[in-house]
Length: 79
Figure (cartoon, rainbow, N blue to C red):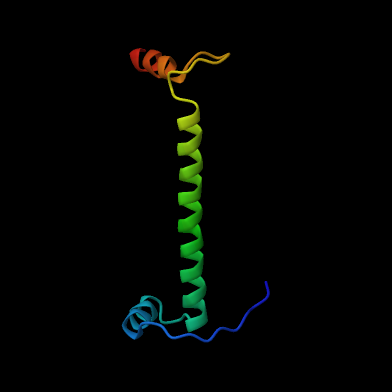
């Protein structure tokens, strides 16, 4: 993985609290962890939006070749 140098100003209190979590990490490792967390958070929301759109397009009570999910859930709950 290639590295890119950045120069920025951040909230000093927030940086100090992040440094205290793991004193063995360098500032660049703290920034890497924060960027990783941001990207994971965004990806989770992206996946949730995709599922929500898919279920909106195919409601649970719409039938297909396999039946309908609402009926399946009701049958499964009854057993």
